[in-house]
Image 1: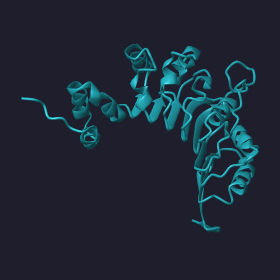
Image 2: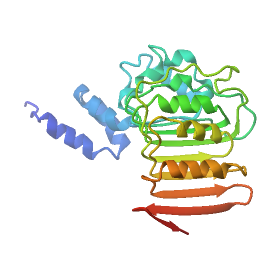
Image 3: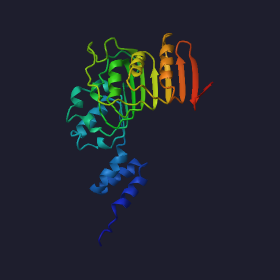
Length: 268
């Protein structure tokens, strides 16, 4: 008895219906090689390296980025960014495989305790379609964060959280960053969230961009008295696009929220 032939569109639809069941998707991979690409689309949509062991396991299992399932990833979270090396970003390195990532989160397993500055250069231009970047580091390298953000021409949302700012210019070596500036700059039309120390340099660089910033949402957590001047500058720079504003002053735990809708401000 011959096996009935099903059109590819129907098979794809069946797999799409199973996207919420990882176990069923893994079983589908065993049915036929033709089913593998569609199942990988869901199995590897969200990748998180919470520690160095998971990252090393990935590199060992998928040594060739051109054939690894990283191509299907839409979200990438690297909590162990301190173990990422320059070689990881070179041709043949695991980073090059994540070329379709839309959301990138870079940080450390813990925001507490002492740690050296982390190099972000390896993540530059990771994906040309990236729209959301979250950076959570114990010691913030402001120049590196800004250069990293500029390497994604479609970037809309930027979140930066740190406990303190690094003393050098951001690359951990005491020398200014040498990242190549892109030919086109991101428009920054989504949300901007900045928290704690080290965010003033990023704010100033954002405000100095030739095309300006066009964020719809600002969430700012300041800790110094002079920061309201930057707040005013950011709000003014986004005055034509801003929809919501959330400001928190850390020492007094004072919170101000302003919603900007259709050129009308509502404070509550």
